[in-house]
Structure formats: structure tokens, C-alpha cells
Amino acid sequence: SPPTNIIKGCLAGTDGGADVSALGIDFAMSGFTPAALSPLTDGGVLFGIRPEDIYLEPAPDRVALNTEVVTVEPLGAETILLLAAPSGDEILARVGRETMLRPGELCEVHLDLAAAYLFEPASGNAIKR
Image (tube, rainbow, N blue to C red; front, side):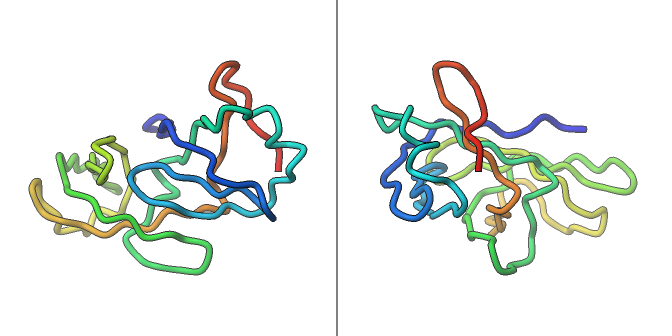
């Protein structure tokens, strides 16, 4: 199984959740209290998402991210994509074997924010929802 994508980000606000800037986009993650986010005094945060929580199809609770396909690794029942985000960060996505994507192609993926995590940068500890 590919490792979880961990990306440096910035916490832009804590009003009713976490307003995060990462991967070159801004998005809101629900379920975080201001108290849980209070240790992030400098605004730095780590955003984590598993490759299997990145989809090619849109759905509620998913945020769109325009990427460029770097590599495609077919593994039989699934395919691992290495994608370059607008920020320059690279992320892994685990998609079905039927994908026709090729290196160099532009691809819109959808991040399942309900399955994503935030981590405190200094300790690496997950921030509870």
C-alpha cells in the first residue's frame, strides 16, 4: 500500500472548522474545534490524505485539484498515479486499473476531505476532530 501523502500547508482560519491552504488550493475541513487547532499558533499545519482517498470522480465532501500526471504504475487490480499539484508538491493516488491516464496529461482529481487529516508540524501528532 502506498504511504499517506503528507503535505506542508497553512491554517488560514478556524471559524467553524479548519480553513487550510495546501497543494496550491484553499479548502475548508469540518469537524475541528478552535481548541483543537489552538496549538497551531504560527499557522503551519501538515495535511494528510491517503492515496485511496483521492478520486477521479467528484462527490460531496470532495475538493477538486488540477494536477499533471507524472507517472502511471499499473499493479493489476489498481493503478498508482504520481501527480504534480499546482504547488509543485507531488502526491500519490490509487485508482482503478481501467484508467487511461498517461504521463504529461492534465487530470482533475477529487480529495475526500472527510477522510483527510491534519497534523501538528513540530510533533507530528494528529489533530483530533
